[in-house]
Length: 310
Ligand SMILES: Cc1cc2nc3c(=O)[nH]c(=O)nc-3n(C[C@H](O)[C@H](O)[C@H](O)COP(=O)(O)OP(=O)(O)OC[C@H]3O[C@@H](n4cnc5c(N)ncnc54)[C@H](O)[C@@H]3O)c2cc1C
Image (cartoon, rainbow, N blue to C red; front, top):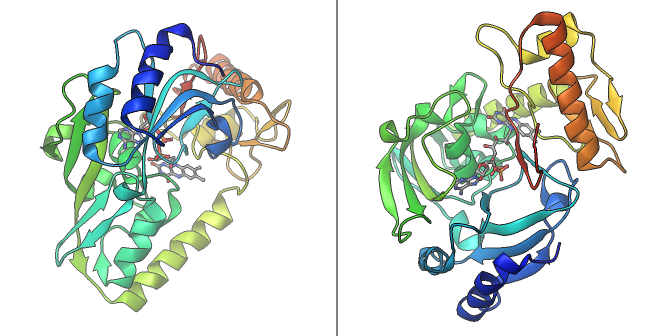
């Protein structure tokens, strides 16, 4: 994906002011967990929070931008993304473990956070072991599983807003209004770090708890290239039940994309699949479930680079 003209001045400024941190035609779709989709016209790696002030001061409203964590909830168009992709660098993967609080950088992989806490004898974040996202993505999405959600453990998050001057501000968990796979964090905001509440626990027991979660996931969810649950569960029901029991759509295929036989709310991208295959299958599943049950499923995954996502 070559940078559109509207992106050129920004790309030039960022390249000059953040040397070595800007890449054009950068890998994007291939780095998501679906492993489909094209490149990003421009990607900037943030090494310190001050870098975000540079981005905020240079970006104009007509430039598309997206903050990306581990790409475990993203579908990138085959044509790529004609905007600026913002990623947090390794400096944002630091974890500080206290007695009853853990502070983790926004780029910290959730399974790493879960394992570090267990090893240090801190209970509370074990449910993250099976969620392959980042801390920033978890706050944005209120990621959860195994009876817990981010909102149960989040004390506060440090956030920079690219629509302002990107000065990091600490926002309490309550003000972030975490709901079902949602939060009040806006697309212009970058989660730089989060503080979680933890309790003391026995490292051996905690490690066993993690193994149990991993075992459960292996048993109930497919491996390979996917993005976890594709659709939000409608109130009082499960998207997987509607897709499978009501509509019999397990195994339905479009090109290289297939509704998982193991978990009907997962769509797997086989080798050779395209983002268009995945998108088309999402639309087909949504429309067939709506036609049969009257329930219109809403995608939980985010689409980027499409003229019309779903
Ligand atoms: C195998 C598998 C299992 C999964 N299981 C679960 C599960 O049990 N529960 C669950 O909730 N989810 C699950 N997911 C989905 C996914 O892991 C979560 O939604 C996760 O929170 C996404 O984090 P990410 O860093 O990958 O975000 P990305 O996919 O990179 O981005 C998702 C959204 O978050 C925003 N975002 C990412 N990082 C930041 C940041 N630092 N600041 C601001 N915004 C940001 C992006 O702009 C985007 O809108 C699963 C996914 C897979 C592949």
